[in-house]
Length: 264
Image (cartoon, one colour):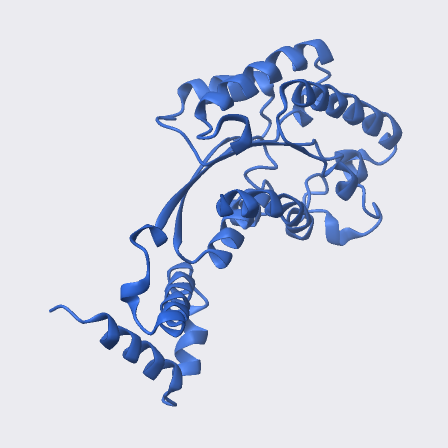
């Protein structure tokens, strides 16, 4: 059975206007990922109909797929808080909420404890066919934690961004390097915060120098990770990693960059 666009519009407006348990249904849908996508899609239909009175006016390209590759370590997968609470997953959720006409193909290449060397090996083993609309890179905390040298980090980080560039659909314009958070602000770093912070700064300066020389976008979230080290709200239950609230702060700083990318 095929419904006309005007019929679909009428049904959408009728649904929003009727009184029988509509609020209850929306509340129930909002508790699930699929339900949230249904709400976004319904909202998009109503918006499109209100703008033109018909779905016929919606361009065929308005329903698009957007691909995102997140490269990194424990921060990227949300160690201690769950992957759904990581900055990368929160970024996907926010992009979907703002752009209901998109579906997002989200792929993560990251594991707890990974150094730059581990990430290079992980990328080599991963199924990374094709290119991605956006690629984020957050790597280096375990190089610092394990006492690896800056020279090794620079060499391997350069290899990572070079490979990432071949996976980014628009090259450097689709890439974003994220600075290394300062785990010295956590209870695990208590007593050695000054040294940890100094070493984290050195690694961040090294990667920013490479990004600047190659014109790769770079965002600093390190200062956010140093927010009020005595506030437990920013630290996960393991006393080492950062909480969902901190990941949300990171996401909000990253989000405008990729929101703008979607407008292109």
